[in-house]
Length: 43
Image (tube, rainbow, N blue to C red; front, side, top):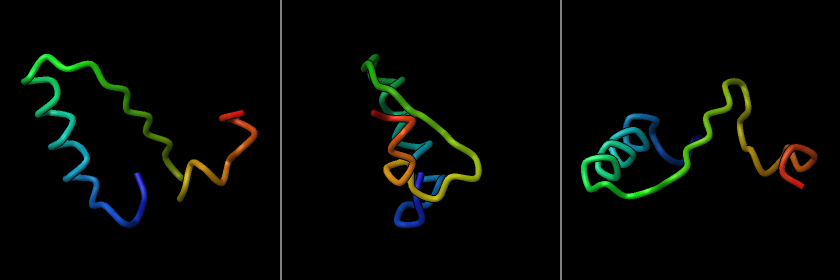
């Protein structure tokens, strides 16, 4: 999650995916402002 989207909106979207039986991935990283800045973890 980042500061451009409220966490509640992200979780509502996830809830809609679940209700629609859609596959999705959600990675929550407490304390990380922007996951893409942590390139070593995602390379």
